[in-house]
Length: 336
Image (spheres, rainbow, N blue to C red):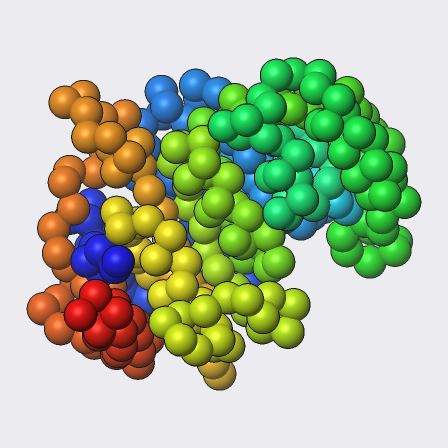
């Protein structure tokens, strides 16, 4: 069943949307992570960045925040552009930022981070996170490292991803030094990275969205997932009540049904000329088992809506409430 549309007191201030360039939206997610979780927890173990694309989020979390991030994506990442930008800002660190803005225009968040080289590169599991991988992990079944089922799967999946093209344009392709040198090759190391993860991130992970959530729920670890594309033709078995999931709001509602304590917020960025995919679904450790000393900064969630008010304030909230009402009615009818 659906839990309440929760918006923590800590994130109510995030409900005011602002225009953020698409290239910088991953930094909004970073700000949410730093507010939602303690630094101690974020640095306590592996963080999986699923469908991490070029790897900018993983790169910043690694170099600015000291996190052990592992990218899960079948294509090689390419950190060269963000590394060049950070290096330029480091070289200009003694210059007045106001003068730089006047000469070159607005500067991004990297300008204020003052990251010092040499820069680290996140490790990389170069495979897709999908139902086949979750099945091969055997969580709750065959979980021993080096099991033949996992070894066979890893060899085949890793080889299939070996020739995948890099993210970005061909002239910005990944080099051995920029990504492949940190690729996890060993099946045992890969298995340990998955089953020892402390947090799973999925920022617009496309076809991997369900698997992000399912893996976190199976491991009973926190996650933050921002759904994007629905792909109804690829996933015809998704049902919301008695109808197929075809729209974004349907998909958000469908994902929320995976756990009654799943929380939902809207990250504070919009999109000119359309709807931004800015909904974040997440759970903290306290949402799995309430602890007197939770590792998350959130208090027990009050029943706020996305916009922090007492009723729906936008079209998405209206649709989510309609979906919840529809599913609950169907469940009640089935119980009668």
